[in-house]
Length: 238
Image (cartoon, rainbow, N blue to C red; front, side, top):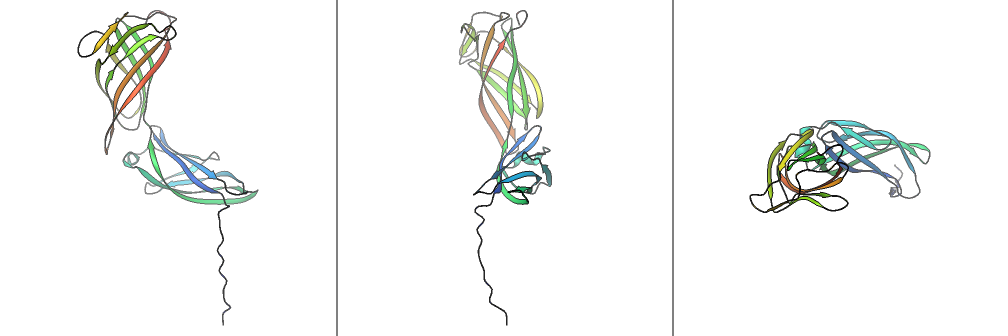
């Protein structure tokens, strides 16, 4: 005859656990950030571990800073969220311990476009864009563009409802592209020109609202981005 068994439920509410903080998909790779959620008085110090993105076949070691980096593959572009599982090892109140985890988290696709420099010569504005893209992008147009001295707020030119058609396609990856905008009256809107060049040694601010379309496999996304860039003109007029 078997002795009766006693079943006792044990709560793990005071045990630290691992959570995926973020997954950022960039042109240089997929960056996964983990976090240790501490509960109660137990202290867990991570040393390392591994992660796997479910259904992608991708696996990576985790640093003691709880970061993992995976190669960028096309499958991430069409996903809205993914499952991530793994194991983190370290020390729990001084003793060796392992924490297994599984989490479903949204993917954040990071496309970056910024102005690195600009010149203004003979009433032509030339803008240099630094792009870091996961998907192709199209610079559609700029509108209400203006250039003025940063500290004295004297306009070099300003436009109101004047649309500068660009139509520049940019492939995925890291690139520097050039956009030229002729500053002259005409078309819709208003253009006010107070000079056709800039002075050396002076700080200038470029204000350039821009329409950008990002081309995803699931459909295009158009965003309106406000570029503001301050530079000091070096040497002669540029």
